[in-house]
Structures are given as structure tokens and as C-alpha cells.
Amino acid sequence: MSDNVQKTRGSTAKRRRNARQKTMQALYQWDFDPDHQSVTDIFKQFCELQNMDKVDTEYFEEIFFYTAKNLDVIDGHITAHLDRPIDSLDPVERSVLRVACSELLCRLDIPYKVVVNEALEINKSFGADQGHKFVNGVIDKLAAALRVVEYRANAPDPVAGENQAKSG
Image (tube, rainbow, N blue to C red; front, side):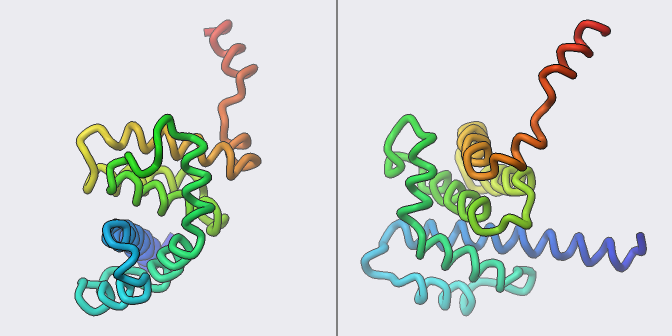
């Protein structure tokens, strides 16, 4: 693989991670005052006031608006895997889960393992010390429910694992 292709892929991955990060931050901001700030205003504010040079702005726009438009559905999916009300979650964790759930729902081209990894990295950067463990558990359940075929295809084979244990 040429160096240029590798640089482009790395650059695209970094720009996507930055887009996810900005989406999480914008959702976090909207979460505090949804009745007084429209998603359009928050989006414009982020594009004007944040450094967006290294952000895939199209991806940011797609995931942010998808999440805002489908918030009840997304929260319903998340709530199904919680042991408490979604409003009681740490706001960073709630926003990270919303971004991940949106990607699982609307971006089938992104492997669920990438969605999980990206969410964990963002949560580690912005969330509570051990919050990534909670987020990991919830997203894993979301992936199993929302990406059934893909999830099962990547699950370890229990028979193979049993055979390896017997022969090892």
C-alpha cells in the first residue's frame, strides 16, 4: 500500500474521530438547554467558533442532525440496555452513547467494532475515570441488538473455543 493511501486513510480516520468528538460536544451543549438553542444554531456555532480544520464536517453534520432528529428512537434503544433512567447518566456518557447509537443505526458502512472503539476513546478523553467501562457494556449490547448479523459474525465460536480448550 502506498504511503499516500495510508496517509489519506489515517487522515480520514482522524477527521472522523474529530467529527465524532465535535458531535458529542454539540449534543452535550444541546442537552443542557434544548428548549432555547436549536440544533441548527448549535451546528452553526460549532462551525463558526470551533476549530474545524481537522474535522470531517460532513460527517459531523450528518451524525449531529440524525441524532437530534431521531433522539426519541435513539434514547429508546439506549434505555433498553440501562439499569437506570437515561436522564440520570453522566451527560458526557449520554452524549457518547447517543453518537454511537446513531452510527450503529445510520452508518452500516462503519463496522460496529469501530463504533465501539471510537466511543470508548472519546469517553476516555472527556468522561469520568471509569465511565468507559459502563459505555463499553451498553454499546456492546446496542451492537448485539442493532447489528445482529454483523455482531454474530464476529462473535467467538463457542464450539471452536471448547475444542481449543480440550486440545490445549
